[in-house]
Each structure stands twice: as structure tokens, then as C-alpha cells.
Image 1: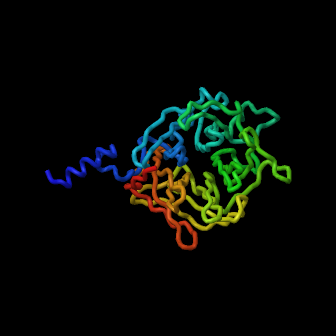
Image 2: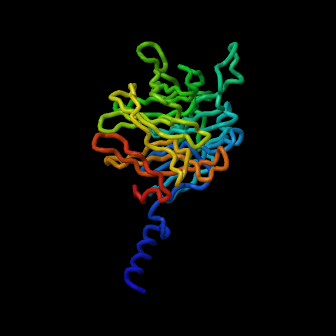
Image 3: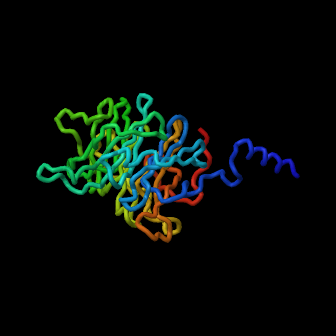
Amino acid sequence: MKKSLIFLIILIALFKIPAGLAQSKNPIIEGWYADPEGVILDKQYWVFPTFSAKYRQQVFLDAFSSKDMVTWKKHEHIIDTTVIKWAYMAMWAPSIVKKDKKYYLFFSANDIQSKARNGKEDDHIGGIGIAVANKPEGPYKDHLGKPLINQFYNNAQPIDQYVFQDKDNQFYIIYGGWGRCNISKLNDDFTALVPFADGNLVKEITPKNYVEGPTMFIRNGKYYLMWSEGGWTNGTYKVAYGVSDSVFGPFERVSTVLEADESIATGAGHHSVINIPNTDEWYMVYHRRPIPNLDRDHRVVCIDRMFFDKDGKIENVKMTFEGVKRKLK
């Protein structure tokens, strides 16, 4: 046996990864999942996706962790509707943050479609809720016992929340469906929204062509708001973005950066972004529809690199089957 082959075998054994897994491959996890929240927690990579199924079956959330962004461990049913008593279907679009050694998992539930009528809210309970745990994988408990947001402020459906920590450590919740995007300030223990100086609980920051699925990050002092356009049930779904000097915008639409590629997949959208700390290395975590796509809920989670040009514009993200290279934390 040649020395080079022996060395390779030893190297694989030391890193405890099978041959051929130098890259993640797309999709990165098995099964139908969507709306992935990619994040780094406690020096590990995590993905918190929606279980992609009919709404009456979509009553729990799984999570996935990795030390290298290639090999993923599944954490099943980290939360479900037996814990969130007011939710009965359509738990989706998780967003997670760590604060004061606790993990707060924000989620949408029940897919409410209209405002409460005649003061009756029994058939309109739903919106954005919060669960809390001592570990990213749970077990989680209901933080409020009710939705944090269940009203249609500015006619934005209360869904698709993203929780963003600003440079001054203030946490904001950015959310909204039906073509409207709102931002609200969270109080210190995540039990309520804090009114702005004008007394309003929310501000509208909707950019042109916005549909849903907002996410935000800061790069070189600029605020990047990204969102999904098109229809989530089909191949028209895509990702666009805008840039501002303020968390409140205005966010003028710059361009589309992720869309269907008939040689790979369609319906790519509802994404999140991972930045390796202290680097300019960026990754987009997103869902897409395999070709052929045989069902509304057949969506898979993928990761590909995201690059910027010299002017700070996001370059078009190329979907791949190869995924990303191993990135040890």
C-alpha cells in the first residue's frame, strides 16, 4: 500500500468523516424542509427549518446541528403543539437568538388570514409566538402562553419573523406577509413590543416587490434587508435585497440574487445568512424545489456561498449540488 494512501486513511480516521464528505452536498439534510434559519450558536452551526407538509401535519419543528457545516445531526421535535397550546397547525419559519444564557425560538403558527371580527378572537388566534429553552435543542416551553403578535399592523400578516440584534444590542423583530414588512422593538425579556417615540408599536419598512421572508445583517456599516418575491407554492420564488444606513430603511431594492435554475432547482427562497465571525465569509441557507417538483410541499434545505463585489453589492448566488466545503468551528 502506498504511503499516500495510508496517510489518507489515517487522516479520514482522525477527522472521523467518511471519504467523499469534504463538501456538504445539497440538500444538506434528508426530508422535506423549508424556511431555514441558519445560525451559529455555542461554536456550532445550526439550522432550524420548517417541516414542509400540509398545515395540519406541520405541528412540530426539528433542528439540525453541525461542527463543520457538512455532517448534520438531527434533533427531532424540539417543540410541537402539545407545548404551544394555542397553536393547532402550521408551525413554521423559526428564528432563534441567544440572550442571557437562554435560547428564544420565535415561530409562526395557525396561518391566520383575517383580523378578529366583532371583538371575537377565538377563530383568529395565531401569529408569532416565542418558546424558550436552556439549550438550542430544547426542550422548549411556551414563553408567553399566547402570540407575541397576532394583529395585522399595516395589513401585514403576522408571519415570517426574523429577530435582529443591532449594533447597540437592541433586539428588533422584522416580519410580515401579504407584501408588507414591519419592524418592532422588543423589550428586554421578550415579553412585549416597545412603542416607538410616536407611540406606534411597529414601523413599516416594505421595499419594492417585497412578498415575505425577511432577514437582515450588517456588513461594513450598512444594513442589508433581504426578502422573498414571487409565489412560495411554485417555481417563481426568488430572493432580492436592499441596503440602507439605518435599521429602519428606507431599503431601495437593488436586485434579485437567487432564483430558479432549470438545470438544478426552482422556487429558491425564504433564506437566512451565516457570516463566519471576524471574516468576510458568507453563506446563504435557503430552500428550493427539486426538478421535477411533484408536490407543493416538496422543498429541501441547501447551503451555498454568498459573495460581494467591490462596491458591496451581493453577487448572484449560484445554486449547486456540491454545497459548501467543510468549515470547522
